[in-house]
Length: 329
Ligand code: TYM
Image (cartoon, rainbow, N blue to C red):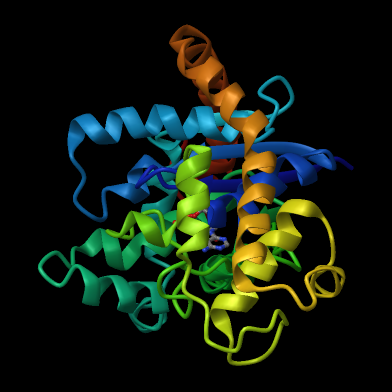
C-alpha cells in the first residue's frame, strides 16, 4: 500500500536552513515512498499578528520555496491551508475531544505566550488541535518534521487514539519522521536556542534564499567558543551546530568532518561550512527565482492541489460526521 505523507510549514518568515534541513528537504525524499501532501499553513500563521500584504507575499514565496526544495508538484499536492475548509471544520470537532490540561502542557504554547504576552489568543492555545486536524484529515502514515514539532505530533496521536476508543477505526494513527542529523538546527547567535524564521535578529538564521556573501558573513560571525578545537562535544552548542550543518549539507558524517578539520582553526572551518551551504542551496535558489517569475504556474499548482486535497479531506470529514452522529447533507 502506498503511504500518505503529510507535513506543513508556516508562512511566518523566509524558510531557514533549519526548516530545510530539519523538515522540508526530507519532504521530497520520503515522498518517494508514497503520496506527499504538503501545506503552507496560513491559518496557523495568524496565531501571531501578521501584516496582510506581507503575509500574502510570504504564502506564495513559501510555496515556491517548497517546490524549489525538491517537492515535485506533479507527484505531490502542495496547497494553501485556508483553501481547504475541512481543516477548520475538523479542528472544531477535535477541540471537543482535547483537554485543556493537555494543551496547557504544550511547551511551544508556553514559549509563545511569553514571547507574545500581549496577544495570548485562543488560537495560539488550540493551534496543536488544528495541526492534528491537518494530519488526521488525510489518513496520514508519516509526518516529516523537526524535533520541535514532536510534542504536537504526539498530541495528534493521542487525540486519534482517544477518538478511536470511542469511534472504532475513525482515524489512522500517524508516525513521525524525524531526521537523525539536523532535527534541531540552532541559532547562529544564541546556539542554545533553535534557529527560527521569526527571530527578530536576521544574523541568527540563514534563510534559504540568502545571497552567498550573506551566508559567508553569518557563518563567519556565528557564535562558537574559545576552545579553538574542532570536535563534537557536550556543552559546545555553537561548534556542534556548525558541525551538524556541515554534515547535513555535505552528507559527510560528523566524525569524518571532525577528522577532516583536525588541527585547523575556526576561521577555515567556518568558511568551509559557509561554502557547503552556498553550494547546497545554489540550485534551489535558481529554481526559486524561476518560479517566482511565473505566478501563473504557482497558481496552477496550489489550485489543483487544493481541489485534490479538498476531495480527500471532505471524505474523511463525512466519515467523522457519520460516526459522531451528525445528519448527512
Ligand atoms: P514551522 O513552520 O515552525 O516549521 C516547519 C518545519 O521545520 C521544522 N523546523 C526545524 N527543524 C530543524 N531545526 C530547526 N531549527 C527548525 N525549525 C523548524 C519544524 O519542525 C517543521 O517540521 N506547526 C508546524 C507546521 C504544521 C505542521 C502541520 C507540521 C502545521 N500543521 C501538520 C506537520 C504536520 C510549524 O509551525 O512548523
